[in-house]
Image 1 (cartoon, rainbow, N blue to C red):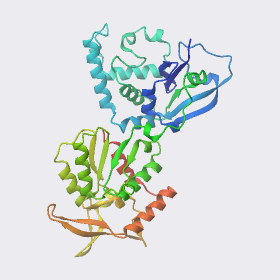
Image 2 (image 1 turned 120 degrees about the horizontal axis):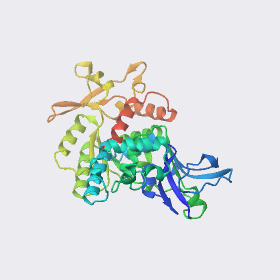
Image 3 (image 1 turned 90 degrees about the vertical axis):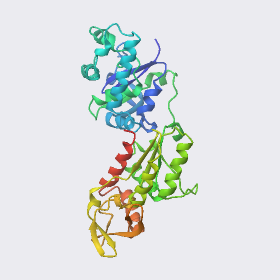
Image 4 (image 1 turned 135 degrees about the horizontal axis):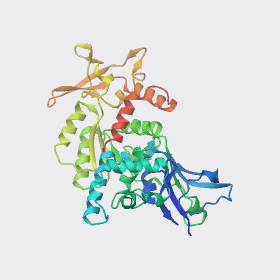
Length: 388
């Protein structure tokens, strides 16, 4: 009869494979650290309808991947899959299937909403018997378990993840295919085997703090990102050099996904504007650090003394996203100092004073994991949504 693997969504098993497993689906939502091996009661299995039950076994060793629906969904989103793209993919597949005459009824009449409703009903009612499903129009609609003909794996995954609770457990059960020797038990995958988004920023401190915050605050997403190494390769670090690097990448027709981050200050925005005058490919997303509430009324030091100003777009380097607790010294907010004047932008460039003190304080904050991370999370969530 063979050995089977499957991925279960809220205890509903699909993506079935005989003597193997669906690597395209697994690699889209799981990371190596999601792999587990544990002994479980045999009656806890999410059984496939056509697989003979082994009730004589009181327990078995589960080998496979496990994660929550929320995290699996986030992993799809950072590469650009969302409800609108899943809907568009479904509609494209529906048109193609209709033109090819794949269905014996008007599939063009089946809306994406109707498709989601059917997914919701099937998973909720745990309709594992295909004989039951085939009694109604689902017989013609369902092509590969819960997908229609021509629909992408990412679209199917995201559609399902969108209609189940965020805390639902998603598991890929490899127990049989590993136990019977069809698939080797996964080792630690090298980072090179995981598709990554390359993040380019203005300088090495930007890279240091964004990457460290990412690994601490969102460990389930950090392995999908790679940050440029300024020290090892002696890369020039400033806004102008970053813009030149992006132009070189565009001219080279590089296809890898890139996120380009400029500081939310006068110089960063000036260089970003210059860069945006050329046509950039879809795989390169250019962003500036987001505006934040803290910066709307922040103390600054200039020729006229100390004055509170909105420094969004003028002086928001990475330090401004460390949190109010880090930007305090002796119960006083550390001010921004106005420096060079940009003639073309007709405004000053600002920078936090006591930068080294602030940076070291944030390193300690990251190590402890305590404090307010609201603003750095705002920046990270902007990165997560770059391709959306």
